[in-house]
Image 1 (spheres, helix red, strand yellow):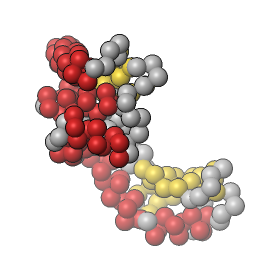
Image 2: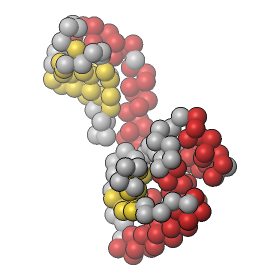
Image 3: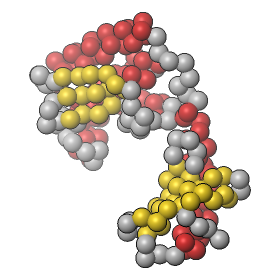
Image 4: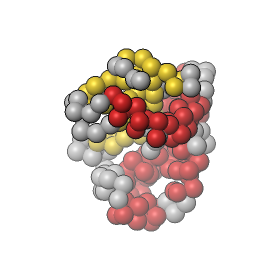
Length: 184
């Protein structure tokens, strides 16, 4: 029987907490701990039953999360970052010109869950520094992806159609990049 706080299933830590949420939620943190959020109107037994019904997914998600942690071991050197910044400047500038976008700022930042982000209101794109570890075509995919968000703000059909026009093999590149464990 679960209680709030730390519990274990098959030797895997499960943090259980009651929250003001509408439904039972299961997530896995980067340290491999499974988190179970149980609404106040629900019993802990119902929360546990839900988790056990979804345990196979939780274990798989935990494995992926722990595998991601090993992808980025050694910190990037100043030389790698300088080289990457030059590459991003080149690609960002070239694609802005090609797409007819002007006054689009960019910056580099370490991000845990994204390869890039676009603030279309401020016309600012942020690229994950960890992209410095990958091939040019994968960096280019992220540049095009983020610049496309200046026109289409979500990932719906219009976004996908525009990506098809701009970078026909983007789905293959996205799959290659996704295999490294961070979302786009």
